[in-house]
Each structure stands twice: as C-alpha cells, then as structure tokens.
Length: 618
Image (tube, rainbow, N blue to C red; front, top):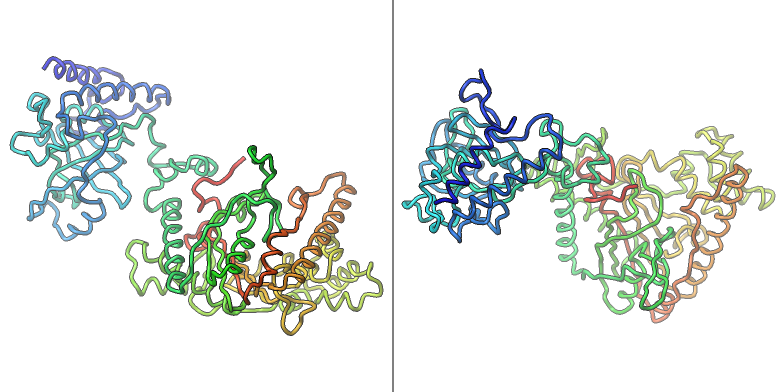
C-alpha cells in the first residue's frame, strides 16, 4: 500500500510541472485539453526527459498489478490478447446508431498507437491506429478502477470481472497524466457509438503496452522533408497512416509478389534461389559492386542479374524456373534507378519470346488486380475499371487490353526518319558512319540533335549500327512510349544472350523490351543455346564495351573531365556458363521484370524510392 500511495503522489505531482496538463486559470472545465501531453515549444531533449520520468512512474504502477496482467509489464509489455482489429469492428458495427450501445454486449480488446487524445475532465477520448485502421477508445474515471480498488495480487479491473485479469489497468488519473501521443496502448470494454456517431470502445481496462520516448512528428503536417521520409521510413509510415503512399506501397509489394508466385505456381514453375556473390558479373551489361571474401582471399561481385545461374538450372533439367530477388548495380541514382532493386526472372524450356509476351502481360495484370483488390471499397467492377484506366502521374494507362507492339527499327525510323543499318550500308567509308548518321538525322529534321546527342551517337557508332539503333531509340523514342508497348527485334549487337532473328539473323535478335510511361519495365528473349556462338558474342561484347569506353573517355578529356563512372568497368566472360551450355540447353525463353518499377505504376509513386522501404541515399 505504501508503494501505491507513493506512485499516486508522484503522478499528482506532475500536475505542477509547467505545461504537463495542470489547469490554467480561466480555462473552462472540460475544455478538451491534452491532459499530460507534450508541452508546445519544448525542446526534444526536454520532452524525452519528461517521457523518461513517465517510464519510471509506469514501472512503479506496474509493480501494483497482478503478475500475469499485461499492465504488470508496463511500460514495455510482453504481449496483449487482442480480439479484433480496428477496421473489423468498424465494419461489423457500421449500422449501429448514434448514441446506441451494441446489443450483443460483446466485450472486445483492441490495441494500437495513440494518434489523438482529448481529455474532458473525468472523460477522455483516445484515437488509436493499428495495421487495419483506427478506432476511438472512450475512457472515463467511473469505468476505470481507482488505484485503491486494485488488488496488487489479482491484476483484475474489479473482483466481478475475472475475465479481464490478463489485462489489468491504469487508473484514470494515471492514464491522464502518463499517456502521450505515440504510445502503444490496449483497451478492453464494450462497444457503443457516441452522440456524434463515432464507434468507441467503452474501456473498463486500459494499459500502456509501449511508452514512446520520442514524440511523433507534428500530427497535422507530418514529415515534409522528402529525404527525411526516405531516411526515417518508420516515421513516414507513422505519420502517413494507412492511406499514406509508403504503407500502400509496402502492402502492394506483398500483393504483387504473392500474385506472381501463385500465377507461376499454377503454370508448374519452380521457385529457386541463386547466389548473390559472383566470381564475375554476368547476365547484363552493368557496373557491379566489388567485394572481397577474406577466408578465400578472393575478389567477388554482387550479382547484376540472376540470368546465367537460372539458365544453368534449365540445363540441369528444371524446365520452368523463376527467382524473385535483389539485384545490385553500381550505377547512377535517379527517380527510376536505385543501386539495389528487386526483379523477377522467368525461364521456360521449349518456348520462345512470343510465349514470354503472354506471360509478361499475365503477370502484370494479375499483380495489378491483387493490388487494386486491397484498396478500400474495391469491388470486382472497380478493379476491372481501374485496370483499364489506371492513373499514373497525370496519365491514364490501359493495362487491360493487349499491349501494342513495334519493332525497334520501325519505330526509330518513324520517329527520326533514319535507319542506322541503311545509313551504314550507304556510308562511303567506315569512319564516316557516325557523321553520316548525324547528317541524316538533321536532314530528316524530325528530332533536334544536340551536341551531347552527337557524342553519344559517335560512341555508339564506334561499336556497330546495332548500337547506333539502340542509341537513337533511347534518345528520341523511349520517353514517348506512354501506353504499355512491346519493342521487339532489338539489334543483335545489343543482345549477346539472345537467339538471332529467324528472318534477319545478321541484324536483329528475338528479343523484346516492355515500356510503360517512357521507362523499361521488362526484357525478354529467345535464349541463345549455341555455346560456340555464345562465346563469340561474349568476346564481341568485351571488345564493343572497350571501344565505347575509349570514345567516351576521349570526349571527356577534350572537355577537361573524366569518363562517367558508370562506363568505367570491365566486362568478363563467364566460362562456367559456356561450359554448361555445352552440355545442351533445350530451346528456352526467358524474361526479367523490374518489380519496383511495376509498383511505382500501380500505386502512382513518382520515384522508385517511394516503393523501396529504405532506399540508398547520400
């Protein structure tokens, strides 16, 4: 009893601390004050100090509770026996009228973070939020036990309420003075709607499960600094709530991965995992991250693609495989690029790139449907309507109808008036190819050719007409592809892992890239299965990369600078992959899709950082 008296005395003493809930002269009784909230204008260190004092007081209160009650472990409880989520109760009792109590007399236990607190004398209204939504707790002095009424051994709210022994409770005066915004609490009681129609849990038990030492960001303005949102994602999630972009993106990511796995499972695919640490980068043309294995005293790289190991599994007899995983590329950072990103790669034996088009469209549609289903108020009709009219950054996208298709050479010729292969064939000398291509572009006058464009075109022409075609596509076509569009039959020179085109084997490969809103979303091809041809392609890729790097380095030196770091790396040949192909790989098609970019589109996120939990920052 001495401990109880001492605790109550300390709680009351907090009334005299400036701004900590004590009544001010002239303030009307029941004026809706915060009651024990943080003082406006106080420094963060002052607020933390006060909250830490409350932690000590809660520990003293906890000693008076029963040993099995949640309240006996305040302010950092071990568990809480929740019976319902907030949104489930809102849905179940939505027909309850204002001022009415639930006729079934159901007693519920809910828990969540305190997002709002209003105290009116002997009555308090506390809004809590859990993962599903929000609900209001109605806490009154008459319903909560007083400190003297609580038995230090039983932990029950009252002798007549043994069913609530597992919760315990704060007294009203303790709740009023020790509770702050951001605290995680639990409440138990019956349900009613206030006179204003707000569904509320009329609490007979109330306990603080976790005391927040730091105050939340301003509840009205939240986090305004975009970089701070990325660095402190937990605060962004707390202030944004269930409707915030970050929380929607995380839930959408889970839905997308689940939808893709279920769809591929129905098609008899096997999900596998392949190494993240590689002896040399392969499967794409990108600068890798380098690391070192101390025990083996060996240099390694983080993978830039999962492709080569997955195809080795196809060689081993797994005819349908896929992997969802992280890929790492040591390149620039932008709204579309993050050094680590999530992709799915799919490989199917006895198929070609036409089959991959079907799988790509199906994966995107099933993922989109699952994301749209979890939106509040969704119906089968609204899901299909959104699929056909998806709003993304002011543009309306149609994911429902079959995606349009263009060959790369046809759409480049249409947009620029030039076919690099034709220009190369008509050039008087090999060294004049670049200047002839630039002259042809300017003569056609369909696009504006800047000096920086000329530098890039020259670097591409130094490799091949195929590289030049890819360069023109990136400079003048890619950004304008808003609706989902398959760009097919890419240059063979840009496709070292793809089969040559059946009709134009010297120029093009059986490959497509999918573009939406001016950005690449997926890449696929009929896989090259000839090991001799594959090794020759790899060797040509090494030479081509070196030529491009030399041209860009020379151009940079003329301007007194240095080559872009994204191009300053070596390309190596994966001999183990070549050896695997020599054992024979069946005709196979493969596809890779960027999950982060797909999520950006589905949740209307302007930056890839918005859909990654903790993006890499400077």
